[in-house]
Each structure stands twice: as structure tokens, then as C-alpha cells.
Image (cartoon, rainbow, N blue to C red; front, side, top):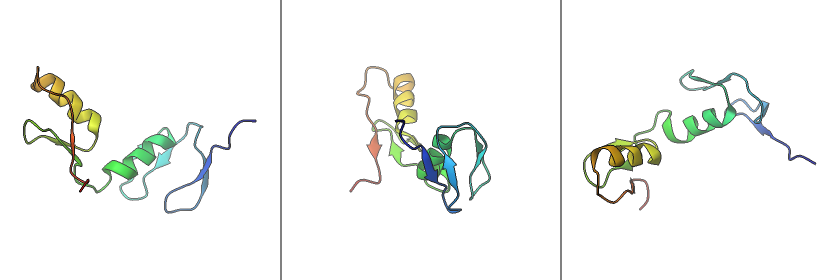
Length: 89
């Protein structure tokens, strides 16, 4: 039997089917996402939050680790590819 893909929506308590496509609106900034996972990522890492990840080679910061990796690959060739998490103590 397939796993239940329904989850409670942030701040509204509505039950949504996380596997289906639809319009998922951010309750804070009104951005709209086609997939629930996009809204979930937005709420966890982006909406109203400062950039979390930093390039170890310069002052660049990004809200996603993958953005810092792309920055390093294109701007710091032949340097180690990793990101510093500024929220870890």
C-alpha cells in the first residue's frame, strides 16, 4: 500500500496532498509554488531568513548550499568545494 502523502499545511492546519501538483501559497510573503516541497523549502530556508551558507574563499553567501557550490565552481576553480554553515555552532 502506498504511503500517505498528506501533511498539515504551515500555519493554516489544512491537510494537503504533498504528492499532487497545485498552487501552494506562502502564508508570509504570498509566493506561489506548484509543488508542496517547493513551499516547504521556501519556508525552511528562504522566507524572511538571512543567507545561511558562506563561501570559504570570499564573502559570498547564499540561502542554499547548492548555490554556494555553483558559485565556487564558476568563480574559484581549482579550490576545494564546500560551504560553511553559519548556523552551526
